Figure 1 (tube, one colour):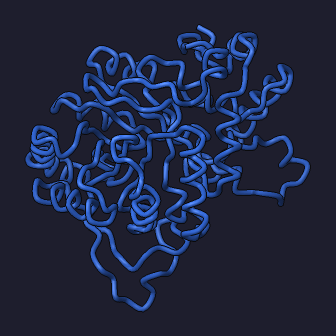
Figure 2 (cartoon, rainbow, N blue to C red; figure 1 turned 60 degrees about the horizontal axis):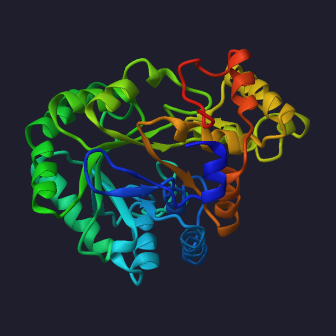
Amino acid sequence: MSGDDLAGSGIGLKRRIGRTSLEVTALGLGCAGLGGLYRDVGEIDARATIDAAWEAGVRLFDTAPFYGYTKSEHYVGAALRERERDAYVLSTKAGRIMRPDRGEHARAPRDGWARPLPYAPVYDYTYDGILRSFDDSLQRLGVARIDILLVHDIGTVTHGERNAHYWRQLSEGGFRALDTLRTSGAVRAVGLGVNEEAAVLDAMREFDIDCALLAGRYTLLEQRTLDTLLPECERRGVSILVGGAFNSGILARGVRHLRAAPDEHSSALKFNYGEAPADVVERVARIEAVCEAHDVALPSAALRFPYAHGAVASVLTGACSADELKRNVEAFTARIPAALWKALRAEGLLDARAPAPDA
């Protein structure tokens, strides 16, 4: 898909999820931000964001019980409930049971959520746990079917030394639950929603997943997944949904203007959920300089780059307002000259193996 084709046809272009018949739009809406990641988002703004995404042609919506401790699922369900069910693709996750928290500080900021609902997450990747999480999500979303169910945050990044324990739950029961749901038609595709490629590779060795939502591992800043994961996904017919294309914010606005006004929007210097280290800041500055030389906005390059890879079915953009959503749509559909990608390669800022949108 060339850059001009994408700019001319919009974000309604679709690619298939793995070997299923399920198709998703080029741009999807990731709804973690609507759950209040770093700052609270009210129901009115959440609804306006989802409505703006719909008007723009977005038809893939990804949420999770963990986002805002069920808040995101409530928002997404309320906004989509009256829409034609076959007109959109709905993705959510399993792996945590959300239990009522009646404690004194139940709605205090936790896990990065500014004002979560009064629940407490309990990890559970067992057969019964996956099915329980799925049923709970159906209730919150107010739907009879979920299209994509992803096992959420399995892996050593989340669990550290406890990962072997939780992986055993998944291996001995959770995968079987995914198969039960897929075979019965309750879901159309299954996979993982994680921040690390190792978990996806491990899962593919044990179970036939259709897709993986991978956050921040194939971006304008990071392309190490070209070594092993993306070729293996292409070989097996597993689709990647790219999350975190801005690497938690640093690619959304860049760094050069922040150097002139360091107190302004300091959160934009976040990289993979933490403060950006000096070498990352420097690399972003170099990428930004190349983009400016070719009259391309950094967010446009960041959102468009991963979609050029054949294993990528959709790029999920996070947005917390209708205006932010519209800016991301404009960035994704902007025309980008092929010379930009050549210049980034020449500067050693883009892996030579990475397909470019002009290919």
